[in-house]
Length: 267
Image 1 (cartoon, helix red, strand yellow):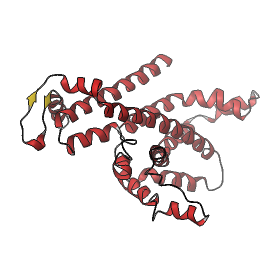
Image 2 (image 1 turned 90 degrees about the horizontal axis):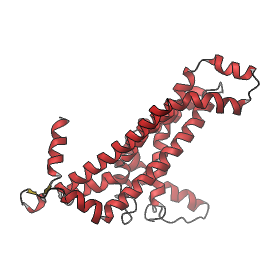
Image 3 (image 1 turned 60 degrees about the horizontal axis):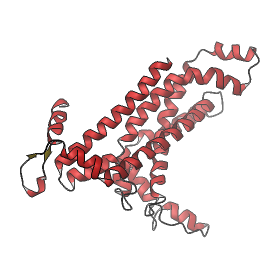
Image 4 (image 1 turned 60 degrees about the vertical axis):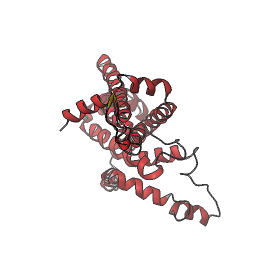
């Protein structure tokens, strides 16, 4: 189930095959890959957007998840209630979350526009403006996947022996010093692991783009996954789409190897 599609798609990547025309496959060697890397501005635009998207959402999710985990690792009122509340967005299906946010942000009937209208504030269509649409998608992703960081970091914080923090307190360290010199070094392996998992998953950005903006306005929110999808299943240029998918795979593998090698050197 896994090996055959990989081999078949790699084979197709070396062919020209526009299925909608009824023409058969024509072997063209590395032409698809060369055209993508040298003559496809849409590929570079989608790559630029995807990389920017991944960098911003993973960084923000990590910081917010760390803050929430640190706060809710302390003994505060309603701690268990807030833990469950913060995990709810991650439990919803991604495509369902995307459609819900699309309805909320609808410029005519969405609740967001109505709330601003209640204060006599007219806001432009956030999803129809190329300057704001990418950041709206990022906010949706942050809302949905910060719980992933929060859950992993909270579990790590609760696994640390309290004696370490008691010793730091006895040595005169304040809360900020304890966090910087004790908590963060202990969290470093789990931070790298969670970040790597989120980077790989965020690079596969598809559901939010598909359901909320369809890559628009223009191509301002077109991710690599969505570009490969439209090339293969809207234009039926299957050989080119497979080449896009394999380049995408190599990019993700390359980033993963860099992060893992860095982690191995530091540990």
